[in-house]
Length: 425
Image (tube, rainbow, N blue to C red; front, side, top):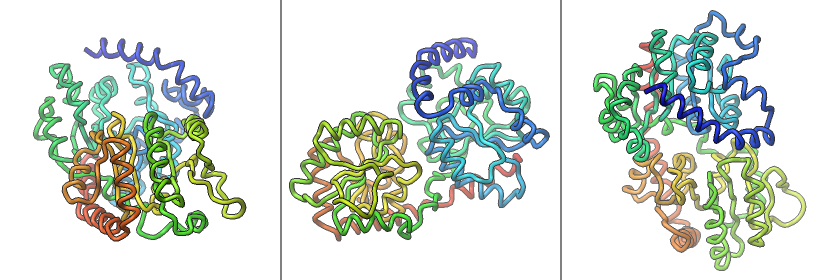
């Protein structure tokens, strides 16, 4: 089974290679990322980790890195001086990890899941324990950890509806993969039920809650460094559309055109999920005839504020939500699975999202049940909801306060997870 998996992975990566080369050529040094993904590490890194047997925390990208940044302080409070290695898959995730997890001894890219790469990585790192976040299940890596008697824990675990259907196709083979995981700390009851249905040992599955509820990096106070941006808004209605994907920006721009007909003073802050797509979104705005400015070029002095601010900065979206009158969280109007709706809730902002929320299904359901969010299916619904919340500040405030209350009510997962992880350190 693993041989077939490795062959399939090889051909999948081969088909992805041209895109990878283009992205790396634009955004950073190709050699370092590729070498690390093949577990060819700089000597300085291997020397730094030699004999430390660190805790290895793996996050895919930004969302999973947030989970790690919340969990790490709890672990270090229990085990001061614990050596820590953090890995990511994406370049963006690595940048956020370096910013939000400064306690780490080193950062690397996750090795490609081939036997050779995995073996070299584990030999170089020699971890005492591996933490995989959310949906990270890598057969060759898990088998290698099993053979070396390295425990592996899935933290903030989730199984989306789409992943569940995919895994069910190979369930008899997938059961063996799950046997290599020491403990499953799952976000919710549905996630636990799905991992059990796929063959996980019931004695190894526990519901700990969603660690993202515990992310207090975005507090209730307005970020001081955004004060000048807030002054530019000058009390205008502000719509923040965050973590958007290809296929969504066009719908949002179309909706904003309708919104501006009734509220010509309103502002759209548009934040694509992947920064490398900013030039593509710029072209869309130019074709639509909307004046805009990049967030990095926004200055308090000078000309009048254009109707659209295009976010091209890293790590600011969670704070930009504090400027919003209403928030739309992307990845949900197209079948991506949605993104984190908890960030705007921390700032007590009313939240809109689309029908595709598999990645945050239980969170979205909780918000909808309490009437603290609205699900929109298309452009007309989005226009109607945005205008409704622009017109009724009291209703918008009530929705935002309710979202913040449910956020506070569901905290505690990070501490519960840290207590379980400590047993294996």
